[in-house]
Image (cartoon, rainbow, N blue to C red; front, side):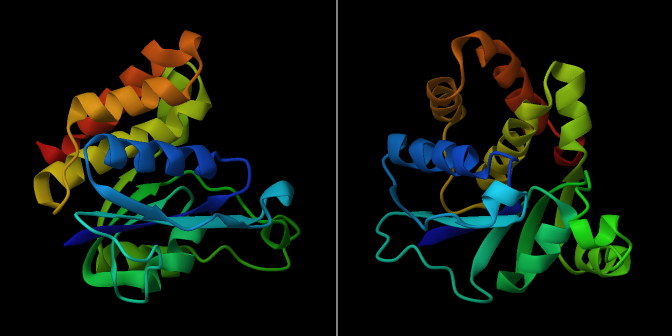
Length: 198
């Protein structure tokens, strides 16, 4: 058994660090973990993506179409771009903050609002403006840790590979600056206690 997690975002959002925290937490909790390299136009603010597979024994990092259990969408358009990988009963953890690509900013293309709304109806979606919530906690950069908190609870409630809360927090502590640990712990708790869970 394995849990397949797809991540999609834009360059500069911290997807590489987010992937590292997830992988490290899985390894610390004695799971086998495989992850694909993140690719994309990260230096230009373009799309970036990656995936993580966690389980008792993982032979390949690749997630084929209709095999992803969870999609971590760090931006709605990027979530929509990758939702075809989700199982029919897959789940989306979605940061609702929009980062409009250049063609949209220049009014050459429209942002696919209707397609995104349709996606949210098709899959169970845990949506939060993690960017704004991060700012309230003290720094926008903790937005991803809020999403990780939601991921931790989803895996605990419904996943085949739950990871202990103290291990999630240990992984976060090892990957963020010392001065930002308390803020990141608050961010994780905010996501973990996401109102949809209660």
